[in-house]
Length: 279
Image (cartoon, helix red, strand yellow):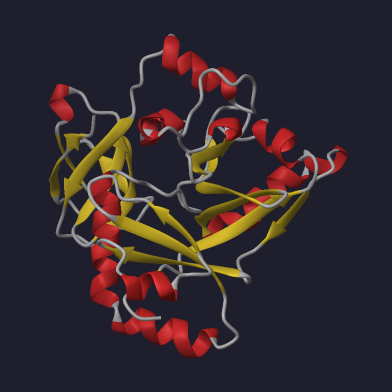
């Protein structure tokens, strides 16, 4: 496919069947009854402590829902939800071999619309036109997908930078079950419902919203040292203040607990950092 950016970090999980809505409502932070007009939204699945196991984009499909999340969390999320779905008339399935995720930057022209005609296309840019295309995997995936990724490395970097600038963080294996949803500002994207009723972890999430003080919050930073999600952020004294959760080139997002004295912090390499709070 031309003019599209393969996003191989993402995989897919489906929940289908008569009880799909009823079941998933009890295990996602968003309200599935009030998805966007295109049937899509953001959500997260939490453990009983209110910590996110995974977060995702979600789309209503025939007889259920399709979730796009980091590929490393498909198996853990599937295993986690299977413990609860046994008495529901619903089925969980890893769809990562059936679908692949691609992105495009800028407005959709006619050529791109034709290329993605049979895909699920979602407007995902917060600051400008940007789209995800969830496409059925072609039989010639190795011939089409992998070479495109290699030759479009610059576009892939632009995509990750746009995600970071929009404030999106996608949990992966290194950051799973570390944060409550508000630490990644999921409420700013409509990813948390405070009115739909109970779901696993809801008590912790609601208490933080109405009675708690969010100490660890999302910050933006830049560094010369190569980093990846899970890299610790340290105080000048060496104490742990948080960790990096998303990276694009030399820019990153981090969840950290900073006081006025900790505004200047550092990496394990000793490189000094200046973080700015995302509000």
